[in-house]
Length: 426
Ligand SMILES: [Zn+2]
Image 1 (tube, rainbow, N blue to C red):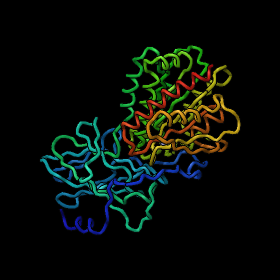
Image 2: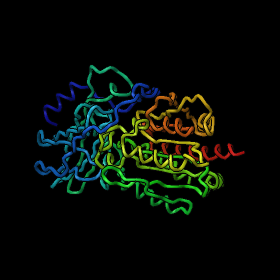
Image 3: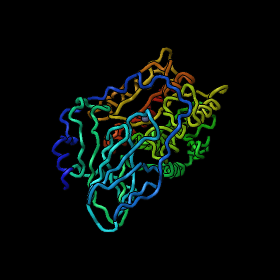
Image 4: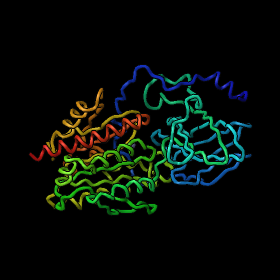
């Protein structure tokens, strides 16, 4: 270990993941979802390709990659700089890059950020498919000793992180979360489409010409009772993507409840709302440089317009109704953002009853929910409610929530939603 590094370790205390009492994330401040200007805001394109420093090559020339600069400090230490597509931006500093070495070697990579702190505990992959977290002994989080001790959000984050990796001629991927690009989601959709009651249509194209695939699940040709599932408005929010996939897979199950449900309800699914942002390795925005989940009132961006127009065509001037809308995201911890509505919705009380059922079904589970009035809302749940009188919510999964629990909860959520929706028909 080099001298500067030893001094740094001495100067800065580092934290692991041990917490005796897990505090509850209370939700984002209401001010963070207030109306903002969603007209295009220029982005800074990321330089892409390979950079070789001695025997080591760093590569960001692939979908989902983000590495804005790399330098060699000494024989074993490299410093990476990670920057956002533009600023200001929510602190979700995504990174993903590949490393190879002509000869096998152990190196340290210092992850540093432009105008942000370190948030995502590094994942390492040797095959691009499985993404274990690095061993805690191989990651040193550098905390600012002056930072206030808060449990969630920016103040709780480390300034930067040192990651130790063994590299060789085979690719080693290092990423903030599992790398789930638009083409991987499209491959997942192909699996869902093998069910005879699922069809798909392209409902639009992103500014960079990526397809907006919308899956249709259901056997009722009249389309009279509609539910809408969307996800991945925000590129690093991979745990939300896992929850969406488990949810949709459960709607396609072979159970009696699922079969009855699909005879009555039609579910439309847009699993990838920001394909350009995801494939460009963005922290949050689309290629218009905008947070798409602040554009559900002004609709300045093509991505939100596509879903708005799709729903208007299905619902306006027809006998069809939207009963339920759900938008999958990730944040600091599991939480649901709900609507506090003034008039009864098309399936009034569904979400409240759904939460009660989830608590009764999942052992030791307590719902963490926060409501806000949809009236001036600019996020998807407000739009689903205001325009179509639907029950709607944002389903947030913690960045570090166990993947097994994420899937279990989401499957249970889908099963219970189907059961409750059938009860409304009685
Ligand atoms: Zn989000």
